[in-house]
Each structure stands twice: as structure tokens, then as C-alpha cells.
Image (cartoon, rainbow, N blue to C red; front, side, top):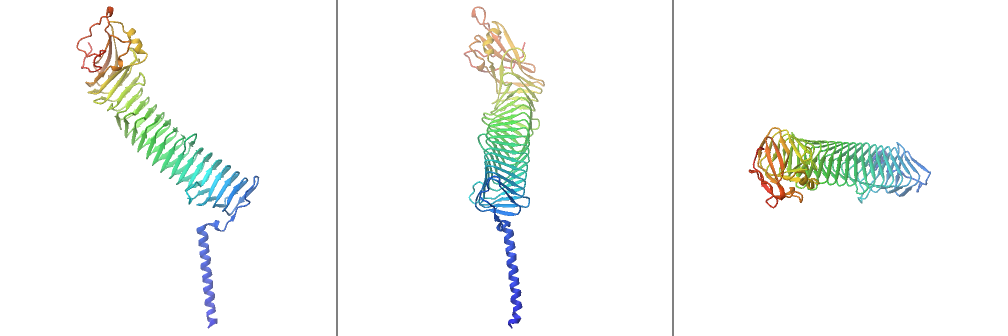
Amino acid sequence: MSKLMAPVRSERFQLVRGVVAIQFFVVTLLLGTSALAQQIAPNPNPAGNTIVIADAQKNSKSYENRGTIQVDATGFLDNQYSIVNWGDILNSGAILDNEYGRIENWGHINNLGSIEIATRWDMLDGVKNSGTIDNSGTITNSQRIQNYATLNNSGTINNSRMISNYGTITNTSYIANSGELWNGWGPTYLINSGTIDNTKTLTNEGTLNNTGTINNSQDFMNSEIIANSGVINNTGRLWNGDVVENTGTVANSDVILNTGSFRNRGTIDNHGTIENRTGGHIENYDTLENHGIVENGEGGRITNYGSFENTLGTFVNAGGTFKGTGRFVGTLDTGTGIVAPGTSVGTMVVDGDYILADGGTLEIEIGGFESGESDFLDITGQASLAGGTIDLHISWPYAMEIGSDILPGQSASIMFLEADAGITAFASAINCESLRTPFDDGFTYDVFQQGNTLWFRAINTNGPGGNTVPAPGGILLCFAGSALTVHLRRRRAI
């Protein structure tokens, strides 16, 4: 009977041994080849010495490298503890910085293969760089990279957790950020001539120079300087609290919120919403194409020196100031804000209609009575001034010259608005308060309509011996000591 059972025991033993072998193989696959890898040596690795890793090796100690660690294309280094590098790490294979691992670099890391930085158990940084990292391979970060010196990327960086930059990151290829990419405060630089795809949070508190492409679909926040001569495609939220200098293209299909200075010397193509809030200043020197909504809120400023294309969009001037010497294409509604031609004195062109109604102000600065010396609003369409206020200012130093420029008994007039298609209404209030100076004693001022134009007139009513020359009848004037805000009746010039 025992002889009959012996083969059974033998088969059972072979079966068990086979199962153990399969289990060991599976465990080996799950743990990776590092489970059988040997510890890299010597430790420390002295200057001038090269360690070549052609298969699987690991580090499970506190390791210091002052020489060269070379990971070949077939090599694999599993870092399970700490590597402090003062020398060179040349990787053409694979390096895993696992959940207990940390790499502190004071030397040079040149990656042509792959480096994976796994999530650490203590949430500390996986890589701290105070030297130079050159990446032309792939870096996959699931933990934290802190860069205090130089990180050059000509390959691919996939970040799903945190990259903190206190030095310089130069990207000439591709960064995919689904975590947090933070360019920290101080003299820090994020220089991009490649592509950055941001699907979570990109924060700039230093200097961001972009000559490539930044695609933002979530949160892009700036509190220092962005210099863009490339392309920024915003389908998320772009928050600017300091300076954006654009000589390239900003394409927006969601929200740009500006409370800082946004200078455009290229193209802004807006199909979403641009909100310019208190303290915000948008300066357009080239082209702003609005197919969505541009809202200029209370305390906001938009200065247009170029072309503001608004035919297919909506411009809401909700308490802000719109000024400049550029061209506005579409209907310019002053809203509850201010429209001010020029930046001191100058001409603003409205290629469309102009509206001034209750709550709005048209500011006109008078700098003389020759062509080009005062503000001028040139309108190709119709002008409706059914309400609101025309606020007249006198420029400096003309305030000191007006008394000698217009002699007693004389007057001078200057046209400040012309609407090619006519003025359909003119019932705005006239505010002359800012015209009063110590040098215009005896002067009166009025505004009158002549056809499709509006004119400002100054009259020196001082007669011989200081007597006042009577003002023409039928015109409401701004006298010193009288109410300074008056409603002007429509009047044709004689």
C-alpha cells in the first residue's frame, strides 16, 4: 500500500513546489526586481570612481555619492532611503525614488531614461535640487520636487503632486501638470519655450517668461511678472494680481480676472469673460478682439492705444475708466464709468456709435485752441448724449497761459466731438469745476452743438479797466462762485 502511495506523495510534492515557485515569481513581479537587487557600493562613492549599474540595484541606506553613478539602458536603481549626490548621476535606464526614498542633489543629474518619484509616506519632498538636473527623458512626479538651482527639461515632466521652484526651471519640451506647479517668490524663473499643459494649478510669484505655449484649463494665478511672447490658451481661470506683459497671443474662452497690470502688445482673443476689477489696469497697444464679455469694474482702468475690436462682443463699463488714443470698433457705451480720449490730451476714434447716458461721464481735457491741443472724440457713427456728464478739465501748464492767450473781450472755441452720422440727443450735464484756475479770473465757459459736432468755448469777459463784458444771451455759462455743474441747452452756433 505504501508503494502505491509513494507516487502520489511525489506528485503532491511536485505540485506544491510548483505552486511555491509560481507564488515566488508573482511576488517578485509585484515587488519588482529590486527585491533581489544588491545594495550599491561603495558607500560613500569617492570622487573619481564610477559605479556602473547594468541590472537591478537598490539603495536602502543613507548613501553619499561624490563620484559617478551610471545607470545603463538595462539598469534599474531603486532608492529606498536617501541619496545625497555631490557628483554625477547619469541615467539611461530607470530610477525609482520610492515611498521611503529621497534624493538630495548638489551636483549633476543627467536623465536620458526615466525617473519616477513615488508618493512618500511622510509627504516630504522626494527630490531636493540645489545643483543641476538635465532631463531629456521622462520624470514622473507623484510627490514633491523642490528646485533651488537649475532644472532643464528637454524631455517630459509629468507632475501630479507638487513642483516648487526657488531657482530656475527651463522647459524646451513638455510639462504636464495635473498637480501644483509653483514658481516661488523672489528671484525665481520659469522659462518656457515648449509646452506646459496645466489641468490643475499653475502659480507664478516670480518671473514667468513664455515664448512657447501654455494651455490652462483650471487655475493659472500670477502675483508677480508674466512676460508672454508666445501663446497662452486659457479655458479655465487666469488670475492676474500684478503684471502681464503680452507681445504674443492670449486666447481666452473662460475667465481672465485682472486686479494688476495687463499690458498687451500682441493679440488678446477673448471668447469668454475678462473682468477688470479695482486696481486693475489693462493697456492695449495692439489688438484686443472681444467675442465675449469685457467688464471694466469700479476702480478699473482700460487704456487703449491700439484696436479694441468689439463688434461681436459686449463691453460693460461698470464704474471703470476707458481712455486712450486708439480705435474702438463697435458701440462704445460709457455706462456708469468714464470715457476719456487721450492719456493727457489726444484723439480717441470710435468706429461705430457712442452713448453717454445717466451715470456716465465723458472727460475732455483742454490744452489749447489749436488742432491737436485738446481732447477729441472722433465717431464714425451716431452720438447719443441723452444724459450723464461732460466733465471739462484744463491741462497744465495751459492753465497759466489761458489768461494771456485770450485777450479781454475775446473768445476762442475748439471742437471736441464729431459724429459722422449725427448727434441724436444732447442733454448731458456740463461740469466746469476743473476749468477754474487762479489765472482765468473773469472767464466764462460754455459748450454748444453745431450740426454733428460739439464745441467748447472760453470767453474773456474782462473789459477795459477791469469791467466785465456782458456774455451773449441764451447760453448757460460756468461762472466763478456759481453752481459749477449746469445743464446746457441745445444750441446752434451763429
